[in-house]
Image (cartoon, rainbow, N blue to C red; front, top):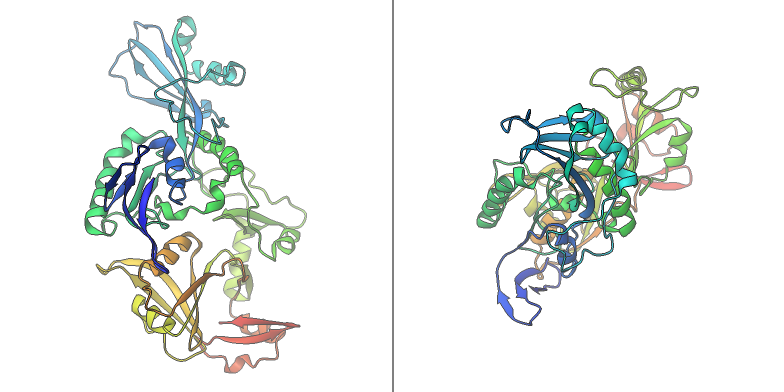
Length: 453
């Protein structure tokens, strides 16, 4: 159990660890590097670590005279296998296309370097296919067909960094079967982070930062359904525009049904279903064949690009992160965070950056001043928790500031292109000819009132 000091507004901070015996150990920093138990340890102090154990298999053959121990590791994604010398024979490690979760509810506390009974019926075809890559393995015996648990994350990247829920609580877990390869580097980065209070400025941790995950990704069903696919992704070829298939339709915007009727091909954008491109009505919106060249949908995408460049296009950007910041000190607080002056006239939107104490960029976003004590901050979807945490860590109890996540409260529709003003003017009574650059105002569209920027 983690001891922590709570403040009314700011994020609580680690002060120590309480052992099962009741003994308390004072600590300014705690690092959770407990592997597949990391989620359970983190839950005890309210930290979200959505890693999940899955069955992982490998076969070790009997000795093979032809094997040279200096051979390199061979990978064959088409057969879901990696092959390397091991103990006089070969090891065939399997990453089947759809794996199986293990103990979704809870990893036993007393499990240590144990084995799981292999599922021969499920794994037999994978094993036979893998052995065909090196036919000589079909002529020798097997020393061991091993099955053991290994933890994976919802996107196949490590869960790494300072927890957004608890200051000075760091996590280094969910290394997705490449812990030996990445452990040294991650250890160096987290040590520098702890020492300097910020991530190293020569390393981009965005793609592995723990704050990229959301709480819904820790649901038992989500973990159970996603982990098998992520295991299978480990040795697949990762083509452009690749999208995971499990745990889809978590979030949909109010336009989703209408976009479906327009034959949209959807992709997962931080849990939101977002159109990537649109197929003609007589075509199915699918990627016909994955490759690294021009995709089959390129002509559709090209037409959309030209329509936006030369005419007008509508984009559903509801996945963007949105925060309502209110209070007597909201303007001065946001100005403290921003490189630009965001606390100028009401009805203005300002594009700005937020920096850390060392002057390195933390966020790239817009701040709209709706009223003297009311602002809306809009950032990209992948920086949702990062932006919220950046605000909360710098908020004091003395400041009259209140922050609310309104991402799902407001749809965001972007109308872009040279004729965007013309098409919008046709459906509102507001005079858009006098709607200047950086303006923000409430306008009418039909019976509704919307914020226009």
